[in-house]
Length: 431
Ligand code: IMP
Image 1 (cartoon, rainbow, N blue to C red):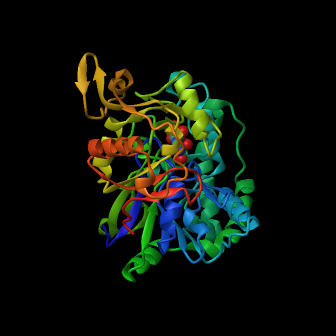
Image 2: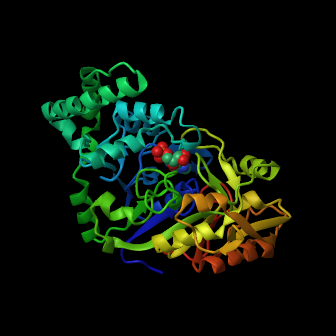
Image 3: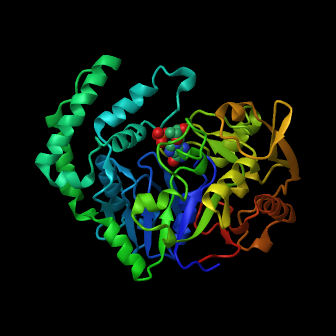
């Protein structure tokens, strides 16, 4: 398929599907790479010739000279984190300058957002979401409550101070009444943010104008989703979700490019499932099988370092993601992690109170009770890391992939068989 609009790369599980590597591959064949939601909660790991880059805010296209990287209005931006990332990239010899644009409409993550994120989670017991503590939920809540502060406000210092004073008056009352926390000082916060604003200035732009102009000139645009569909605010496992639309539906609202500018949606899916944070996970393996997947797959959070919960592939959950994103093709990642298994189970349905369920329930209580119905596939028991063409894969590995794509009703575009850029099989490139 050769799409006329942009390609959207979406995680179809609970995040950490390995989107960074796929975006990196596609960035080579794109002109513009755009982040449209989330913030510093994301952690995209890209390995280039043995050198590891972990990007939280800056799109992975930054590793390709000549690409324009855009942080869209739908992202919540922590300026301290952005500048630390810029410094780190420059320290590793990556040029960052005119190739990065930050939306003047993006909302700022403020110190009280991070504080309230952490304090709000403490003492929540079972109800704890297990957030990344990056202030994401409180920042989006302020955006919706219309008390947020945007990047562009930083360049009108008196207006910025006014907005900050108004928001902080409320936050300080909450901090004292609910948590007995001493008040934060507006002046100290303003000084830091205005200093960061001076450093950020060269990157700040009206990215709505910029992106639409790029699209009108026929530039190839890549939308880089963060988190995953099952963490989407509307279609994920609410309330154990992130606070933005992490699926393809978030693209237009988070960039200002109309929906018709999306040409194709590529779903990134891990050959098994992982989740960080709390919430139901029907195929979770809590014993040694889960530990084995974690160790072989290096399943520790790129942002928080937390061990990820691991389990078998869940076709019911992924079918739900196919539906809400309109997935055109799949990139399957980390297939090599399954190399030494004799049998590979896949969840094809759930059993809930004696009933068989083949659709993903909206109701979290039902999902929590769901027991996976597993179908076993023979393993290949050999290393596939050297495979570069689809036909290099052992028959059992191809059967496993064909079974997944058949169940999901979506064709296969790429297979990742290792961490490095080169360890990728392109089955049928859309670009
Ligand atoms: P928040 O986005 O920090 O508010 O966290 C909400 C939920 O989303 C928690 O379960 C987090 O662990 C999860 N989460 C947020 N970002 C990511 C990510 O990039 N990968 C995987 N899980 C994430």
